[in-house]
Amino acid sequence: MTTTTQLRLYDLVPTEVDAFIEWWNARLVPARAAHGFVVEFAYLDRDASKFSWALSLPTDAAGFAAAEATYMTSPERESAFDGVPQRVASSHVALVDAISVR
Image 1 (spheres, helix red, strand yellow):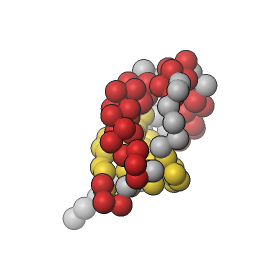
Image 2 (cartoon, helix red, strand yellow; image 1 turned 90 degrees about the vertical axis):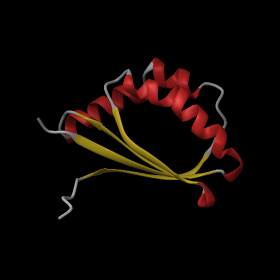
Image 3 (cartoon, one colour; image 1 turned 135 degrees about the horizontal axis):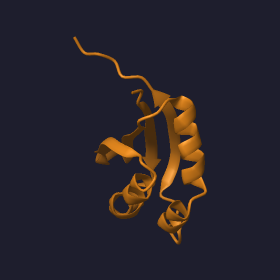
């Protein structure tokens, strides 16, 4: 089966890094999981306030886009973001392909 992976790169507000990580683990990951998304990895470059993570779904790009659209308007997402201050200064999001390492 095809798996589609989305890479998410965030420049975090430096004073909000710890609060972001706590919120991400406690609220965002479960909200994504409720819609079938799997977090493949997450890394923090604390000195640069950069956070990188990838999530996947066992479907093609069109199926991923449909699931993403459903998630974006879901009560789980709304609840995860309710009352949360802006902690991401900028972001880049893209579907990515795995590259074999030889």
